[in-house]
Amino acid sequence: MTTVAEVRDLRIEIGGRAVVDGVSLTARAGRVTAVIGPSGSGKTTTGLALLGEYPPGALVEGAVRTERAGAVGYVPQHPGAVLNPARRIGALLGDVAARRGGGRREVRGRVLEALELARLPDPARTLRRFPHQLSGGQQQRVVLAQALLLGAWVIVADEPTTGQDALTKQAVVAELAALAARGIAVVLLSHDMDVVRRLADEVVVMREGRVVERGPVRAVLGDPAPGAPAAPRTRRQAGPVVLEVRALTAGHRTARGAVEVLHEVALSVRSGECLALVGRSGSGKTTLGRCLAGLHAGHRGRILLDGEPLPRSLRARSRTQLAAVQYVFQDAKAAFDEHRPVLDQVARTAVRLRGADARAARAEAARTMEALGLGAGPAGRRPGELSGGELQRAALARALLARPRVLVCDEITSGLDPVTRAGVLDLLAGLREHEDLALVFITHDLAAAAALADRTAVLEAGRLARTGGPERAAGPGPGD
Image (cartoon, rainbow, N blue to C red; front, side, top):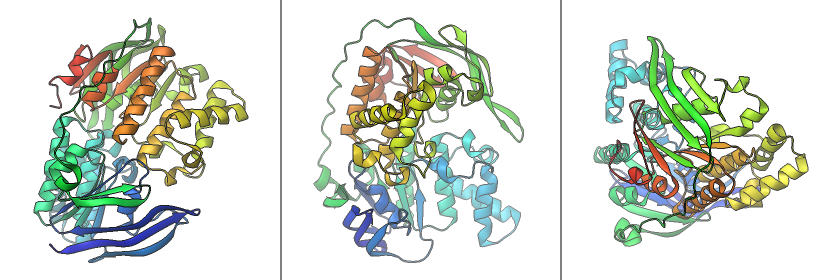
């Protein structure tokens, strides 16, 4: 197979610490190379090196070679961060396609072809929307289409199935396999061993910045073992209703008028209870979560906290109301200031929303981050120096510093390795059971929902299709 890009003996040092140390990697035409390892192992830093991108102030040794300039496209774990929020998708992709010349009809044809190759349904409707009006899975496909329009012969896919329902995950696997079949080299950075087994030709295992194992997928991972059922959690009786939604209808504005994404949704969650919110990508789960937190004011209906109406907009909520309902973003990177240490930003929540002393807030932030597996080293760094999984845990710690009554978690375990994921689920279970926290758990991870949730609400095309006990999360649903 033809080598189209390679990394040789790469070492990347930041502040005297090697985040990548002696890594070699080869991307071959028509082949899928998977890079796996725990959060913070250096996967994303290695993948970005193929594009010639390095953390600020990094000392770089070794060699990175590609067949030609612009040959490598990157699909990030949080695609919304690389799409201009002020421009419609049609304008974004049209500008890229126009670089190859041609008239308006030819440019539009290239855009539609790229969207079709990226397997994005209803491309004409997608072109009229802004990035924030798309689900994470739809944004991901737009970024992939952008890379294809640029003529990429290597695609670095960073956790491409993160936060995807089962049906969408199957589509992503088929999409990447189709790219490889067209002769494109795929470098897959992933925690999802099922996807790695189905897609990869070669596996590279990283730990603490080094390659510790490599080889054909079956030689490295073996055959999949039967999944052991999650240990049942002891669930006590939930308390009174803390948060209630009545007849919630929400939408987005487009060039052709308002488009409704939620229709007359009604649900409630009690203190000490976990409500899992599941459904296909684009079903309205994130929009509902953002409405609860005051981040999406374009809605009708009522949201009640302890029986009292909550203002629609975040800006209209009091400090007590802001602390009471906290939201943890799926795109954790976009939620942090790149220029300040993560520990300072986590501690700031306790100062701003609870009036805590700055020194006490810092100590509490450090303890909370330590409980989430982020010691003094990662906590003291800036966001750009942490992996996606580490930033997700930092975002959770920041929300917990507010001591909320209701915690809305949007796909917060999706970018975590299995061990860290289990630890975060245990922490959330302990919080809701011992501190009367009401938890709204937005997820595509049906196993996590079954392990953590007391009840499950299923959204289909913006409507509440059904609710039930935790076993409903594991059964057939809209993503199966």
